[in-house]
Length: 129
Image (cartoon, rainbow, N blue to C red):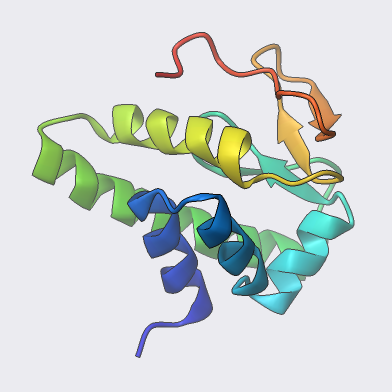
């Protein structure tokens, strides 16, 4: 049986619709969801989570685990699609910021600044498809 982090990665790579995005939010690991809602972590356009503020050891371990699993998923997708890991990570990072962050969550702009998502379109990396 897949754990919630694996299910999250699978949902990310499948590119769910807006309705699916709501299910994605609800299916997040509670500790991860809390870290996102608290503004401790946010999405980066490189497809990985980043720390908005210095993390506690437990938050660091959680994010490190998620990022390791994301990299493994990107590796599989890259191999299957004849792309690089970085290309798959960027594509997913763009989708995560544009389609999966919700109002109040943090994301990193192309300049490296952390912003809080609101109802406007997020600032995306110019390499985003």
